[in-house]
Amino acid sequence: MNRQTGMAVVDPENGNMYAKTKMKLGRSPAVNQTRTTARTTAFMFVAVFVGGAAGSLLREAFSAQIPGVPILTGTFGINIVACFILGWLYAIRHRVHAHVLHLGAVGFCGGLSTFSSFVAELERLALSSPASAISAAALEIAVGLAAAVFGEAIGRRIWRSPE
Image (cartoon, rainbow, N blue to C red):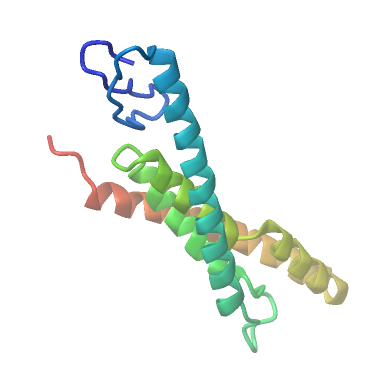
């Protein structure tokens, strides 16, 4: 806490200023900082909860087996979209508040993409054809990585820093 301005100190980890707090007479900076930290933590949990709920509901609404393409899992497209969003959020991480990253990356993308569904679908594929399961896993990982790189490139191009 800066004693002259009464402003919260910028977090060196991600460069975001979490809250602007006015120092009250008779209160120590530690009391104000503790309240700011508790509020920030509460907002972080709410952001992750809301983002996770939205991502999970969207995954259930759009996950479906693609007919005629047995190598792709039902969550293939959803996981690729989540990888793209994660890449984009990574590119703009210095321009948005930490709560936006908790809402989007941890909550929404965490709920949207799911490792457990991916593994369950690979197990189902492996029972019929182990080669299909290995191919599906390799394809989803490769395309997911490409989507994340593409998302980051788009984010860097759109949110280019003024120079």
